[in-house]
Image 1: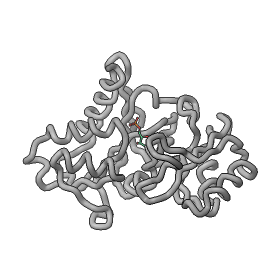
Image 2 (image 1 turned 90 degrees about the vertical axis):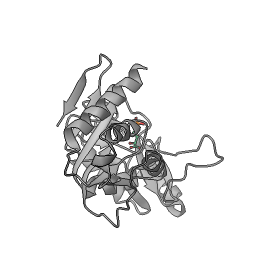
Image 3 (image 1 turned 60 degrees about the vertical axis):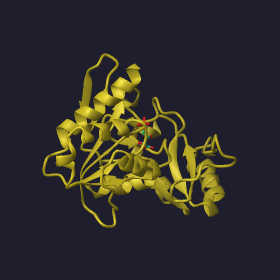
Length: 236
Ligand code: DER
């Protein structure tokens, strides 16, 4: 499909530009675009990859690395990463992004921060001027289950996100549970406030019980978007 081709295009171009021969430790994100990143890295050949170790951002990411025959590593063993490549739900004009559509943003942010270079790969739907334009569920927030009702209450009343809600699972009764055993809240904010995502991120992060916020500010070095016409847009 055009959508899948655009994801593949973004991923292949990003790998070709940012995975260097001397890179040994590579962070692998989560979602449906990142498999194309791994596909391209595998194409570099067993020789090129035999000295490399790949750090996952969750269960899906780990399965992807293992099933692709790549060596798995832990971030506690490799606290400094050469390059992390990951997807995004939306990327604005300053490379701020919303992440967490896949409920993996805690480990994603750890690997994004640990990387010397953090690169985003996405299809054309994610390329926006301001956050909240296309991705409408709201800011993903990982919270400890014990505190979720209090965090919801604070979002509704203190941070004025009345539509904030607990993310319910589809193929499981009850809420989505992250790889860390926590709940996810999605909190929509009006577009005006999403023009200063750093403020939103800081305010949410301060709420007791919040583990991590799916707003990444000033972290990505570049973002690659595959377009419907087969071209690639690079923001940096
Ligand atoms: O949860 C995330 O941040 C993932 O990177 C994900 O949302 C990216 O989505 P994708 O399936 O469109 O790559």
